[in-house]
Length: 320
Length: 222
Image 1 (cartoon, rainbow over the protein chains, first blue to last red):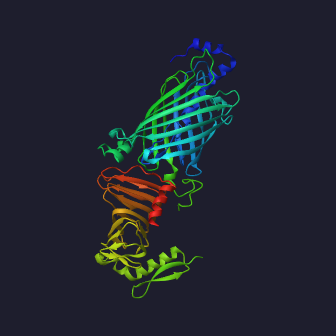
Image 2: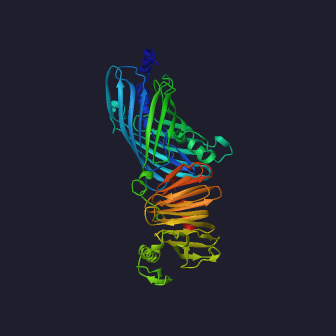
Image 3: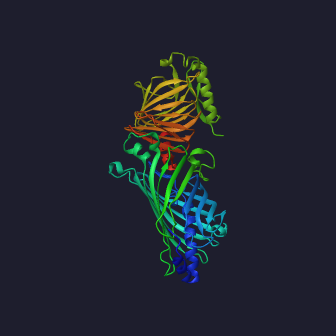
């Protein structure tokens, strides 16, 4: 997509408040998408693989390291032409059902007509509680409360001065309990949240869904299909993330962002998981070309199961 | 300190009860030492078919070993098949220090038991039911119709369940591998995790087990 001087001029016509929203929102969402993070959890015999874009569907003891790059549409000098994120999230269980996530990372921006710049993103913390778990039906539901601490990142890379708080809900549902034969490895996960911005920061409705087909589930629960060994750990997955500002200028067109991310996750149940997805923006506000996100998940509860790092802080007394 | 009822073995090898102020670990160590003193020289020396490998330290109900109703202090040998009916329970102290608690409605066979030398291997065959094993020998194997669970750490505290067409393993401490008999694929299960295996398929990816799930196994094997 080429830069559009006409569109650029139109942006300038709106009230200052809306102009601010219009200019900041896409970058804020670009920051959000790659680090909003992932999931590794299970309901019954259903292991939901780590997601790369949607928030996790349940609390866990894990560390994940995503890297993403996304072309951006630069409208004027100093606008970013590409943004690359290096993130890190540490997730810790407080009890079996309640966990906290701490996220931070670096953002690198290539800019139009200017040198590139690197800086920190805003620090985020998320409390998540697994409210429902139904193993026979491979279903779980969690509620979460995320807070982005404004001003903790570098404004030069788009980190907001003002924070935001997002209550939300996540769920995962495997279809293994249904009599649908080779479709039983299918699973759906979802997320919905409402971001309350502080100060002038706009409020945003966010939602997402993923569809995944688990080959590990296929060979362990449906049929031992003969296939190469490396395929037995694959889970093709497509994530869709949607965000829509509640306020927007009437002549700005849509600032809705919608990214579709098809990809694959690989796990052999050995304490780590690798995922890679393309990030396909479907609106101008989302991005300017196809990006890529890759992520390594380290399951601390698998690798260090008997240490405080790999177990809930408050361990049930019945377990030794 | 609480006093425990423990098992002693006199010079003639007869088991007797005694009261002790020792902890459970001390009791087990003493028992293992006594068993080794008596039976150690015969373990793994070609007399496997008649080698006593374990002692009954708890029993309730009519647990059967080759038609004989087991009672406290009875000895178990290689090749014995132990049936624990519904409503009964059984706990064995093995010669290597391992402890096996058998849930009601379980049946298993001591297939092999060699705890000396380089070819150390303990192998049980679980036809059905649930075993709670605190294993002190590596490898400690429990085979079922669909797969084999093997404690691969020097010591482990784990459960294995065998049902028609499936098996489950849950681990409280140590590492246990669950391998499909048919296709050979295995899952390595660490502490606080569990996994299921269904007939003719690969093991389900291991996952963290909840307190409730462990409690269900603990209750039936206590």
